[in-house]
Image (cartoon, rainbow, N blue to C red; front, side):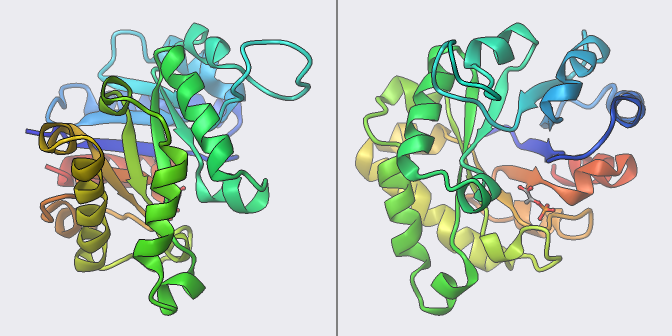
Amino acid sequence: MRKPLIAGNWKMNNTLFQARELINSLRRELIDFEDADILICPPFTALSDANDLLIESNIKLGAQNLYWQEKGAFTGEVSPLMLKDIGCSYVIIGHSERRNIFSETNQDVNRKTKAALSAELTPIICVGEVLDEREAGKTIEVVKKQLEESLADLDEEQILKSVIAYEPVWAIGTGKTATPQQAQEVHKFIRTWLKDKYCIDVSQQIRILYGGSVKPSNIKDLMSEDDVDGGLVGGASLDSASFVEIVKNSV
Ligand code: PEP
């Protein structure tokens, strides 16, 4: 019922030359692949070239961040309209690196989510606990607060146009993946929270991605869990062969 979504978060990687090479290779390898939605999120500098290379392709384009204002004196920031204009249909919001390195709060994530939706961009809203919180048994409490504040005031129509990504921070870029059971426990909590806040129909339609050291070797097991609908892939999305294998193993 929910079509898998595999999203590559390139983070601050790839020059234009490297980006073009990677995209051309992905296009070649995934040309007929329709069983999952495929998304790449290059850095801002490569979005325009990426859009040109992805015309009439089954690979969608997303950004890694935005600012919530439409335009104006916000040096260094990029608006939702600019992303739409350059060909993006998705945007990652509240990635743990934005939260932890750039001090983004749940309130910022909420503003950014609403701005993305207003510009008809699909937000991928990230939540997840750090290691200390998991070890203290606080994972659900932390994720609940992130959901409550990051998704505050979103109506049914808005949440249906959103994607949620559960990314345990201790698993991002560390090579440590949550077990499929650990992922499922939190994904199930998120879906139940959505059911309680909205309704069962809404909760069943929303895609919840897992992120944190997703690799070709673990995506199948993660995807076998009922509430895991895809992956947000960092490191492994920089290598064409790995990303292609993750996409193909996701279904
Ligand atoms: C990410 O960037 O969202 C991520 C999950 O990274 P990695 O796959 O490298 O852990």
